[in-house]
Length: 482
RNA sequence: GGCACCGUCGCCAAGUGGUAAGGCAAAGGUCUGCAAAACCUUUAUUCCCCGGUUCGAAUCCGGGCGGUGCCUCCA
Image 1: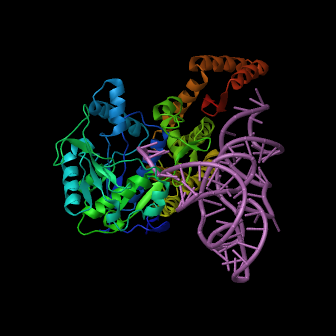
Image 2 (image 1 turned 90 degrees about the vertical axis):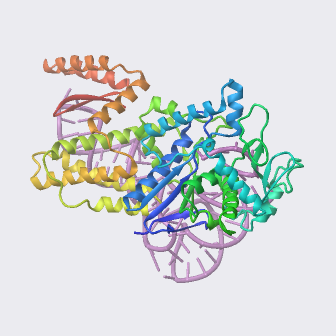
Image 3 (image 1 turned 180 degrees about the horizontal axis):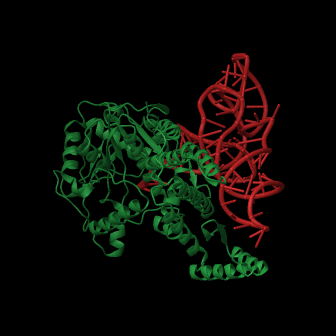
């Protein structure tokens, strides 16, 4: 089954063809860890997580590398502001990032390299670039990459050097031979983290770390490189230039990575969520209000390349939806208990996989699930007893749906526990006290037993007005927060 | 200014040449003591506008209009 993806390098949808059949070497640009991660990061890494999960489900042996950028201007600035050691600050936020990713249900990458642990490789790579004439040390102790030496420069971003020059905010910088050249190595300023190098004490520039760590852990060319759309230029453009130049006699972008994927942004009121605009929510803030799986469902409800608007309202919609999914599963599990699933994993699993084969179309997968869930509910809610065949069918549904969920990172919890967790979050948001609700339900039950329906309904309506829905079922009365 | 991307039902959102998926909301119905939940039915002859190509276009091309992103740190 070919995997199709929209390749930024060629601007079209094409087949993912790895260098070695059956193996995918994948590098996703990781976070710069100077602050809490926000919803934009959540999207990014949920997307890559599903990419990795699906490729593995399709039988590929995937090596997934995602870095931590822990040496950087912003980290140093933040650490200085707080009087904290930059390395320690970065390590702290890297841990927090891992916790956030775990909460979201993302698999850990196979390797999570840090810049601070790869300085020797970075220095060696810069030396190679200097030796090959692609880079030059400047008098101020910086080392720059000479953009005009790389013929394929700007191809990923579809920009030529003249385009770039016209829009560039050129700062008078005597050290650079060309305004578009970028720093591979920055001379140390007092108090900054610094390492020894042939050009004096200093630290890596921005783009070089990803190149060096990619080559260190995956070699070249890799099969797939991913990141947010904002990384196309300059970050990935420069990564390509320096990596391709460093590897063999590579002069084209493909020398570094065969395919490139970029995802769209999370937005607030149709504006990019970003640190600089200040319109961001951290993952932790959102997870205080909503279940992590709700966030995941929300993020997978839009194709990865499109922008996705964040709002509490849309998360509430997701919460309702996830509750529906788990409630159905709970019902089905109960009815199918003891029955063996019919046949092999079937139709809907294939449909879902095919949707993911086609540029990772997660909304399409959710549509596949929607139809299956409706059908399951029809059967589950029908009056009377289910035949053995029907119970096998329900068991097969539960199996297949969970199989699809494995690839999406959804529906892996015990249904009852998940429903309860969703309710707790909703209750918390609305300030509803569970004990109080339970007391109301008990009172209503007593009234109904005494045939005092008016009183029973009054209690129910009062609860409903506060957002608490009473559900009378064969198993007794339960409740939920709307 | 340069380079890209986007504009599909009230809202969210697939579909990128073969005659408009799915979700939410809304209305009616089944079920229910009444509800809630679940299910059924209904809801875009039409895909921002105008031209063109084609037997055929939401999908391709040209021109408008509107929005966003990148060009500086950013997932």
